[in-house]
Image (cartoon, rainbow, N blue to C red; front, side, top):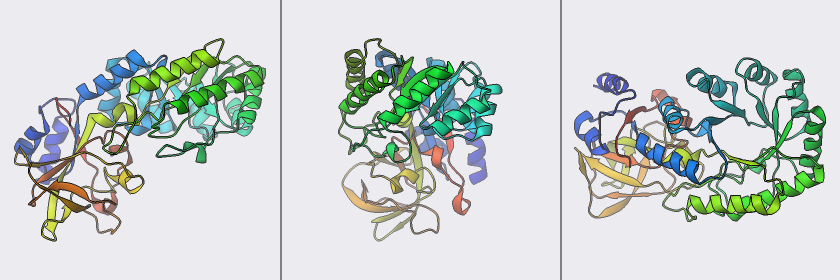
Amino acid sequence: MSGQVSGLLRSYEGAYPYTHCRDVTRSLKPTEPVYLFSPSSLRQRALSFQQSFPGIVSYALKANPENRVVDTLVEQGIRHFDVASIGEVAAVAARHPEATLHFNNPVKPYEAIEQSYRQYGVRSFALDEAAEFDKIRRATGNASDILYSVRFKLGHGGASYDFGSKFGCSPYKAAALLRLVAASGARAALTFHPGSQCTDPQMYARYLRAAARIAALSGVDLEQVNVGGGFPEYYENTLAPQLQHYFSVIEQARDTYFNNKPQLMCEPGRGMVASSVSLLARVIHVRDHGRSLFLNDGVYGGLQEQSLVDLHLPVKAWREGQLLLGPSVDCHVFGPTCDPVDRISRQIAVPAHMKTGDYLEIGLLGAYGSATCTAFNGFRPALYVDVANGF
């Protein structure tokens, strides 16, 4: 049956066989985990960025490189992509050669820079130190048609992941790098990242104020300021303003602190795709009088991020096409592998009296769900199915 189900799922590539998760649990009854992708949900979120962000929207591919996700974004009009490896460069270029790629991993192999520039036409690179600037210059033959985005950082909290712990230079070093870029005859930009799940829009204003000061200190006119990602998804434990408020703060800060009003760019990943995918996992075993559930997917699959950060994902329970309601109990949830760390770190409220063969549909897994899956212990990553209506 497992092979038959996999074959059925693969045959639905790009199609819309189901209206809702209800139809999947009733008709397909998958014995393997399944990602339910709602193209309409993704289009709606992309449209909100396109209509409200005061600049260019560049999708951060690392959040979810699934072909149907990328294709849907392109169909919606997204033309810019933030890529972090030569593999991501090649993947987008193969399907959408017209896309504009921004190689914004601040540390890149020499060969990746060279290949992306010469074979794939990449003309936008990030950096945060002089050694990377020299590497890009050598790999591109001292080309002057490159946009160098100098990445800087500020000390702060209020985010799920602090990107400044790995990337970004001080404002003074950023000014010096801008002068190097200008002296080379190339185009200069600044970029930053306030951290994943940034719940304070004013953090963007703080960074933009710093960016204006860096530009003034360097004496270099910026072509662009890239405000990065960090736009939050609204998990059950997330308290944050709506996206439009972030966009308003960003535009006002740019207009307040810059006289020449450089072009703005953003790189949403999680904030773009999280809401468009849910994970349908089957209960394969019940223990402790219903207080412990074993699923056919776990932290080595689509729930990997749950072992790193406390994001409260919404959950629905299904049985033979029916949504399970009624009194709930707090359960320990384990994945299918033999590894003891394969468990959700906190208990999850589910309907009482769940049985083997029931399903949990776990929402907001469009970002860092399938993108970080492994095949540990021989369990294959879940396949995708399109649904007309999302979670």
